[in-house]
Image 1 (cartoon, one colour):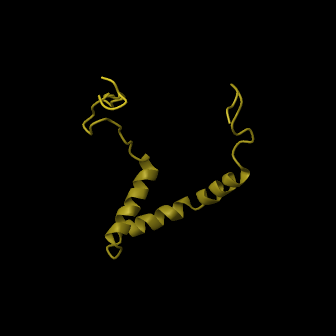
Image 2: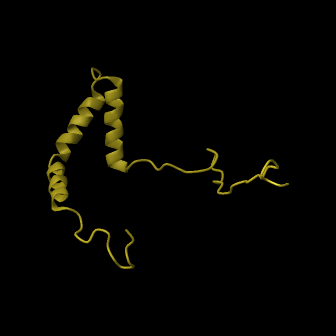
Image 3: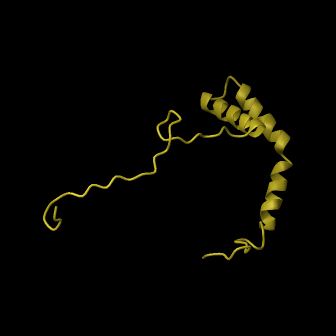
Length: 94
């Protein structure tokens, strides 16, 4: 469906339920951080759980790291060209 200029694809805005869920979750932020810290610092917790907790804490404190996009993994350009080769053969006069 194409929208006309100035027309919203979501004229009603966000559903009210998502704001209620967000607000309810935010009420438990401090407790959630305390739980993550206790897992991260527990030597009895599995290494994967400790890493996941540390990652969650860092993501919430500093945001997720950006993911650079490049063409060759070294910061090179992204190619956007296509090479087309026509072959001689039956039905394809050369």
